[in-house]
Image (tube, rainbow, N blue to C red):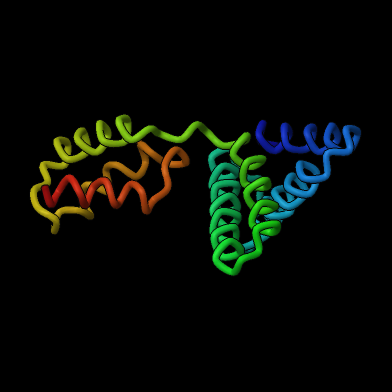
Length: 151
């Protein structure tokens, strides 16, 4: 079993004892998503820590998007609940890259791939994606690469 999944299960027990409802429901949801991922496909398998991080990142993104939708619909209470769940999930994710760190990695990827112009974006993303996996959202990375290549 991955270390991150073990930590989630331990924190589930701790949040039950502490009667922390937000943390409890969020960890249960995360473990359910991990279990679904483990049994999807042709045969059941154990996820690695990197795969667990991908699942948690996807769940955090869902919470962020749901919060935006609730806020746009004028349901501030539901939006705040989604943001609270997202904050719990982010405790288990690697620290996000700052704009400066991301721009530095973009520069390195452009130099490494020898890309020039917006048409070479795919080459840069191919080099850059493994370096930022789990530490920056794909849309944010693509936006930084696009801005740099068109400048």
